[in-house]
Length: 183
Image 1 (cartoon, rainbow, N blue to C red):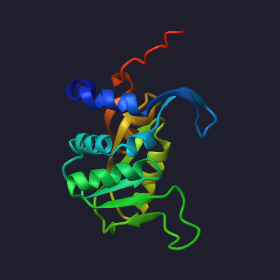
Image 2: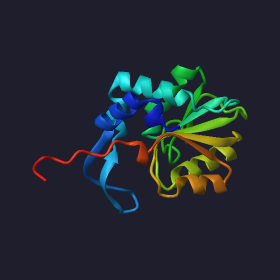
Image 3: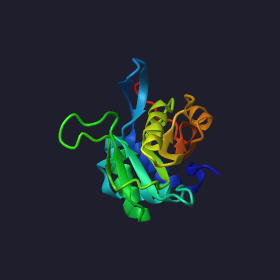
Image 4: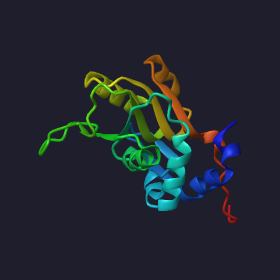
């Protein structure tokens, strides 16, 4: 059973709030005609709370630490940490060049089993890089969570590296965008 059939109200609210039909440029140069705006989700306290509560049900048993990836995963991991009681860490794509000079901030890893948290998974490359970072730092990673999974190979790439992806929604779960009457 998909999230859209289990939580239809949440799916509709997420789509109405965070799914934007407008040009969007990806880091690799690709262009999308629509995208998931995690900032709109994070800016809506009730929607963020309800999304975290829904994602909490996906947290694997045995998880000891939640790891949010900058920037979209940070508000999600904070809300998810509050919902589950699990401590959180925050992952930068690159170590900070000043101050602490750390790439991983927050709770101590101490060899605890970490679960990655991000907003959208496309190719899976960013999650894989962060899984490697945590593994090198001594935190086992076998699972990742996301709000929205786009069918661009992320699940398969992560599986090749022993990371199971748990998504709240897939692109197929989202309601079909309405066309403007003028079109």
